Amino acid sequence: MAFSNSLTRRDVLRSAALLAVPAAAMPRPLLISIFSKHLQFVKDDELATTARDMGFEGIDLTVRPGGHVLPATVETDLPKLVEIIRKRGMEVQMVTTDISAVDASSEKVLRTLAKLGIRYYRFGGLKYTDALPPQEQIAALKPRIQKLAELNQKLGLCGMYHTHSGPGQLGNAFWDLHMLFDGMPKDAIGTNYDIGHATIEGGAGGWITSTRMNLAGGMKGLAVKDFVWKNGPKGWEAKWTPLGEGMVKFPQFLAMVAKSNFSGPVQVHCEYPLGGADKGATTLTMDRTAVLAAMRKDLMQLRTWMAEVKLR
Image (cartoon, rainbow, N blue to C red; front, side, top):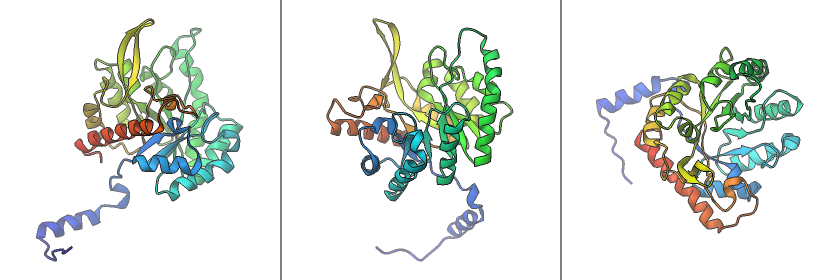
């Protein structure tokens, strides 16, 4: 292939401008990971090659009971699995844990992440009770989460609270997380913003406000899934769907993300019926090829949307 040696004045100026920008200021491409809950039926090297062959650039590893790595053996098992994944040319930008406080087990997990250079982890699982008003429960939780944020900052980590929908879920209103995290180091704690759950909680437009609030500095990670409302024996319920077949306004949402300085991990969640893969099963009840094809289709759809708003 022949290349031209001629350069226009515009080419020279553009190159000079790029060289003048510090490396830290250059935009980092957003990598798309698969949530490893949906690949619990494969392990170790097969986990890495399966995710890579579908086209994913990273894996959000489950480090929790029943996950790909157990908290009790994190110091030995996580380094081995991360090494395998990185050797296959992929990233481990984050892991998903069941951490909700600082204790011996969580410290062991977090210190292992720091040693491996994995900055982000997902935590959460906090719920309200009916005993006290939400404001009082948030105030009571604050010292516990403050301690977690301080440990994160010490280790160079960022804890991301995963936002869910539904009764009793702390974070389903989003303003409550703003209250909870207020005054804590913003580089050490924030949200793993789930736009599917956000749309369930605020479908008419509340999701726009919560997105704006999170993009103002709280959104550290982005979880992607889609849904529709269906009326059944239990009344109206949200049912997960493949990307593009539900009610989430992805083009509008991703355009908002593109205008921000978001640079965290992006994860695809396949929660719709998928032979058990949707629920983290270790054995599938449908053809494996069809399961992987559905995941790849979700990935391709997300990439298309991201490219349209120049997030890729």
